[in-house]
Length: 115
Image (tube, rainbow, N blue to C red; front, side, top):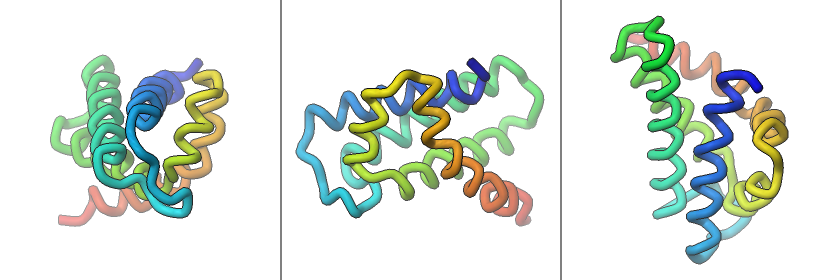
């Protein structure tokens, strides 16, 4: 399993578990309220922890990148989708989220590069 798939497995499972314990919003919406908060915080924590292991980039860039990806994924993931992802293996979760992450990659890089 790649580092990125390991990073994504934890946040998705954590947010999905939280979602099971709360009321769900419309399936057509992005994550909102406590579900969004839990997902973004968990995703940020996982991303930052992985970045600390490699120490290949300046902390400010890592933080901006992690925030962009965490919030972008929360914007593009519905509550129902998150529940479905929780039922999958970590590798399959990553594969399912890959198109969203690929779509975010350039916009997050562009956002970070802006002065």
